[in-house]
Image (cartoon, rainbow, N blue to C red; front, side, top):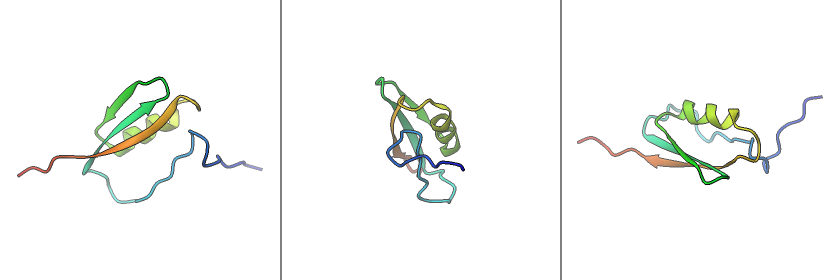
Length: 68
């Protein structure tokens, strides 16, 4: 039987919207203090899922500045 990842695990990721996220940038925070910035949602999700448990802290979603 397949066991689901518990919500308390750093490997757990919950998607809140299925629309294309082109209005945001993303900062990925590691437990070590390292921070990486990503332009696209798919990139940050890929990195999140590829990083071993315990190495991640959280993702910050940043609004892109609107062009006038």
